[in-house]
Image (cartoon, rainbow, N blue to C red; front, top):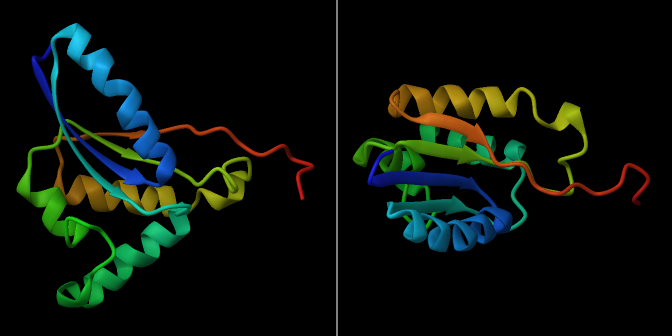
Length: 130
């Protein structure tokens, strides 16, 4: 087992919640975590992909993520794990994942090829929820 992990989350407030939950677990296991978050409240995969596309067109004017352009964030650290996450209000709709999840996966792997990219599953609304 590694003694430290670099983790980047690309998600929304549920990714923030997961980070809060995993820190004491890692501490108990003796694993030091370096966590950075590219999270936007309520953000869907579609919108994350739109932000990435906008950044690629004009990286100087990208002010979406608190750490700066996502491409810079991905390049400055050797990430062990990068999580991507669908917003809960779309997580029960299969067609909302593609092509965005694949596009984001490819973008991450281009800039951080060593990273394991995983989907952080969130709770979903019931299919009959208005």
